[in-house]
Length: 297
Figure (cartoon, rainbow, N blue to C red):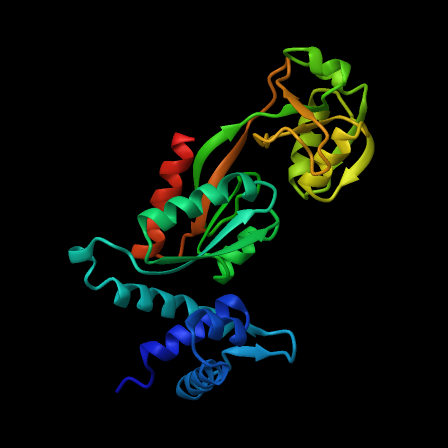
């Protein structure tokens, strides 16, 4: 005899993904006690604590709770898509992660096309650092992620979407901005604004070191937009793999991006998922959509 309902599982999954019973209640348009009650009933049915409750700080799934969340999501997505052969429409939720520095560049496009093509899919977006994404995928905190390919771990499947090459980022009135291609040696003579993003900055410094260069770091930037703002305000120059189409910093200062004379190693942008979890109709649809959009970009 089945000791739980699909409704209870859906309430639990929403709360576990959002880390909040209140947020889950708002999303599902039910009362908060209904969410809490469903979780307690599931805990009684399975004889396991599913979430750690912290007053005023939401909830955190236990290891067993994370495992159940993945299995429950798979079951719910299958149940929602029993008639998919007839409707050709996928229905369900997906936890879509992206490296925080590149998410403004790619995620809006993905979300717009997802809404247009699969209105029944509910994407829950999570921005994360490079170092966080592998663990989140393995724990089930993410279903799919878009990231750089510098951190490749066992237990994950990586698919290369595109490669990007570094460009010099300069203030618009800098003398090097007048060049079509910037000599790396000349760029390294300038004060340098270095990103603080783990592994991303390490990759750049290793590349430069291998060519015999050491940038004269004048400032470290904790975010990409801060890095752009520092460069735009003539606090230094930089090398970046992401080139926004917008050429102005937050405060309206003009930036330019120039290719280098030298050829530096490219950086892969990859699509990642847990190799131990099969794609559901929902995650498969999102995976294919992201692959298609990034290939055409």
